[in-house]
Image (tube, rainbow, N blue to C red; front, side, top):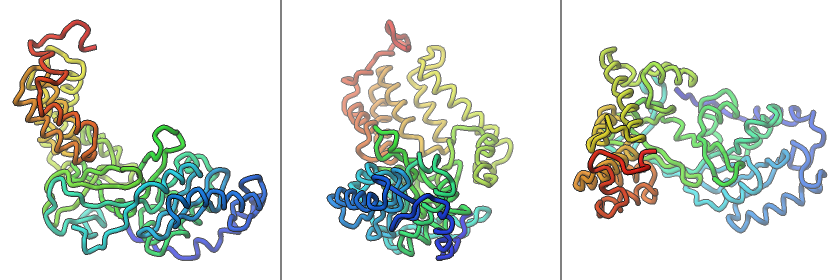
Length: 401
């Protein structure tokens, strides 16, 4: 699916010509003025921000090539390099995040290979156990969402070419080897939405992890992923056998086959994963389970007394398991555990709470709030605030709204 695209100096050769229509060219910034509106202001601003960043990591350089408040910050001493296209405040936050250097290829449990019908994909070299951490990566590039969307395309193209040029050779090759006709398109196609400051709208970014982008889509993926600060972590959602492809999902999966395929066409392919390639009879049964899941989840949320019993949460979990929706089991087991507690079923509440802890830790990490909550429930269901509130199959006054 993704072919390596050569990247050389020709892409940078025309930058000054492309930027010639800009009003002013400052030293080290073909994109114009910053600071007090003069080139001198640019130099002062650069030194000022570098001083602030240096407290976190002396290897960071920037700001460079600023357009209004959007600048390039880079560090070529971390793994294959990191380049940020963002504001001063976001660069300061990001520079304080822990980063991880790339493992050597020999330490990774997979390799890139041709996958029939998909092009290049990622294939397991050995058995990978459920819950095993497969890959931990810092971004090669991180781009603030607002300027990515709103900046004039010609200026944005110059800025992005300059940013890629700040990467070391291997990082540049990895980034440019992703699907997409130019840097903007590669970001749009391959990068992940993330927030480095959830309290600030300007914290929205797109994080680019070229090695992760080589994981192909599957409608029943075998990998969880999460982003912590700006580190991308992939974990096995179930056992993966040697020679089996590693996969993630590009879309929401709680959809019938035709709707999934329709959404995936925007990615430029017709999904032919094993779940989409089942017989029409098998697809009809799968789609029926998806509709039943939706019905049970709605009933549990509103406590529909004509449907919900103590076993409803377990029935929901069984449907997810039959559908091989392993990447969603954390919240499903959590819901089942809470439902059993509400009906005063101690042993079953403990069973599903412990299963939820394991699944949530795979999905969200050991410090996830839901994992902590389920540990408390598993330890003593009778002391949990939900205990017995629906034991008789009826709600107390005011409940269920």
